[in-house]
Image 1 (cartoon, rainbow, N blue to C red):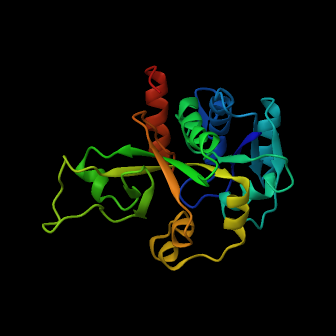
Image 2: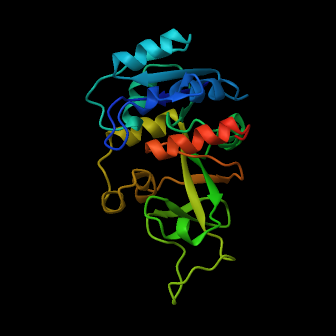
Amino acid sequence: MRVVGVIPARYASSRFEGKALADILGKPMVQHVYERSLRAQTIDLVIVATDDERIYEAVKGFGGEVVMTSPDCPTGTHRVAEVIREMDCEIVLNIQGDEPLLEPEMLDAIVQPLLDDPAIPVCTLVYRIGSEDFYRDPNVVKVVVDRSGFAMYFSRSPIPGNKSLSWDPDAPAFGHIGLYAYRKEALLWFVQAEPAPFERAEGLEQLRFLENGYRIRVIETDRPTIGVDTPADLERVIRRLSEGKT
């Protein structure tokens, strides 16, 4: 059994161009993600996948594994699939290159259910939402989880809702962290399947699995993470690391 982690990294970004190479305390962001991923106990190999020579050379410069992928990949998920298509592996991680505060334990947490149960095709992370601002923010993806620990639905809307449309701090509202572990065959199915109706409506590709009957196991984490989508997010990450926080 072989577990491969792939970090898709592109230079172009509508909100923050070149963020993969943004400097964080003397290292490019992608290096922080790569080095943290290497510390996961369940991963045999970590690879950066990019279509940009600048990122390729940066990864080579710090001694990382990197491959060039097609510039025609429509998403990071397709980039991951291109890398592992001919590899002898069973489980594949899609490790977002803009999560420089991820902890290795987060990756181990989503791999372990697939190691334990061959019937689970996909696993991802969630956290408990603790503020109304996050609950109502459409950029925070919410997920409803069943009693067996599987995702029922993902949405940008505030879910679960109630009749008064009010925020209930005691209700179990979960936010999604976009790290995934897939069985190789599930990932290869995903990239050849057509986008599904709810996926198009929400702009959330993981709904393609749910709409086609694939179950997504979710694991709750209490570890903080900050996805870097803007320069302001980058400053928040730098402050946390400067203060010795992760």
